[in-house]
Every structure is written in structure tokens, then in C-alpha cells.
Image (cartoon, rainbow, N blue to C red):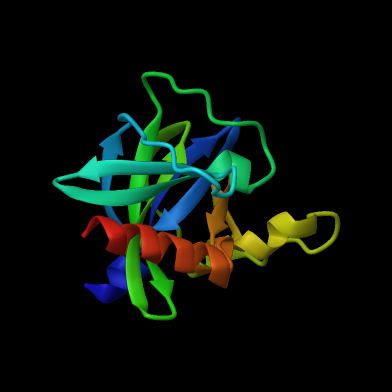
Length: 161
């Protein structure tokens, strides 16, 4: 079973680009709901959502990647993932323009992330997958956030527990 999950990815959109997250890291996908803004947090930290009685910090991936803020539409979704922290793991929601489907991308269809001209974005990528004639940017979830970000997310989640 673990071998099968290794090649399965949940695809999502940020702007016109497709991104992928390993299915094994995704807990669930929820519709966009009211986000309670927190004072004095990074601009990409949108706030907290209530997920079955627990506060889950939500991050706007577009802002984290230096893009414009996510415009909330009927397709906007929150991908709830487990994020590795110094203390273990915490649950975080990733705001995306749209969530699509689970796809299988075999290792031989994944290329190394470009280092030339990609700038800081290359730090967030595990690789670039090929799907038919299109590319899918495979995210390295644990590298998207630095230690300070993950500590903040863990503190926010713990404060709500």
C-alpha cells in the first residue's frame, strides 16, 4: 500500500499552474470557510478555521510563493495536511484556488526541479512531473515553511486544542 501512495498526488491550482502534494500527507480537503484573522502574523498566514472543534491554521499558498492573494471563489478549497515540526507534527490548511484530482506520477516521469532562473520557488519543489503534455510542480511540503513558520503553526494549533 505504501508503494502505491508513493506515486499518488493530489493536484491543485494556484493561478494557471498545477501543483501536486503527495497523497500520504493530505488529511482531507474542505470547502473554504470563515477564517479568523490573527494579529501580527505573516501575511501568508490567513488565520484559523474551525475543523470539527479544533483550530487549524490556514496558509495562503499564493502569498507564500510571492503571488497575489487568493481570491475566494466557489472553487477555492483548503487542503488539510500534516506538517513536520521540531515537536513532531501539526495540522495546517493550505488555501488553493482549486483542488482537482488524485493522479499517479511514476518516478521516471519526475524530473529534478530547475535551479536556473527558478529563484526561491525551486526551494519549495521536490520535482516536476509530466502528465500527458503538461507539467505538474510537485511540492516539498516540509520545505515550504521555515522553522519559525512551523513553530507558529504548532503554537496556534496547540492554543486551540
